[in-house]
Length: 215
Image 1 (cartoon, rainbow, N blue to C red):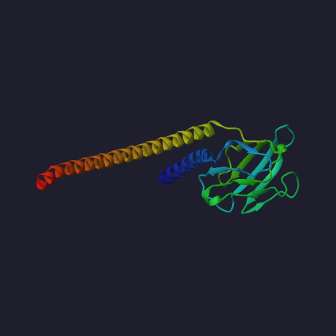
Image 2: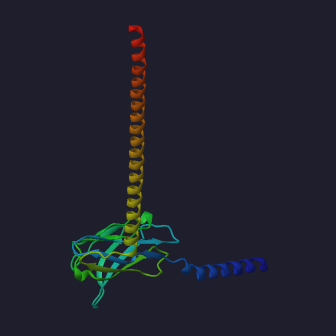
Image 3: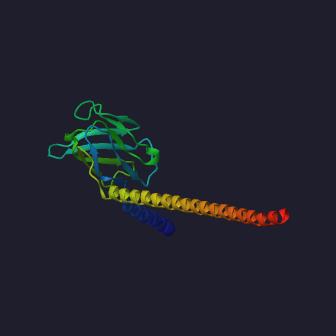
């Protein structure tokens, strides 16, 4: 009796510990946090996640929108086995599913951006029993033209440096080729001059011999 009671107590204690630890294994969301896009273009709102539980048919993805100028939260998109687009509102016929649950991707594609699309987009993923976790956010800024970021400047600087190096290499190669050509031309002229000088000397030697024979 004592052994059975001890076993039950251990199992009960283990179950309580596992229950206490379970909420730690929550869904984690990853987004770009900030996104800038040009008015009239399409934008991919990227949202990926990680989950302790395997991805199955119970997975749900909910996208909502909070306008920049305030106001109530608006429905954008919902996914559960199949995608469900909004039937009304500003995002009707302007949003599509661009994710892949098997790859832990819950992204969507927003079409034909407008200036009133500025605001915060939230991505919430639930994968039972993992239903807790921080909701991902993306702050979208719709602009006339995309401003150069530090990455753009860095890419421009690297590209300019590479172009400059290529130009320098081309100039060096052309200069060496030109110098070799000049040296070859000079060597050919020297050979011609020597040949003509030898020919002139040979002719000068033949003249005295001819005069001796005539005497």
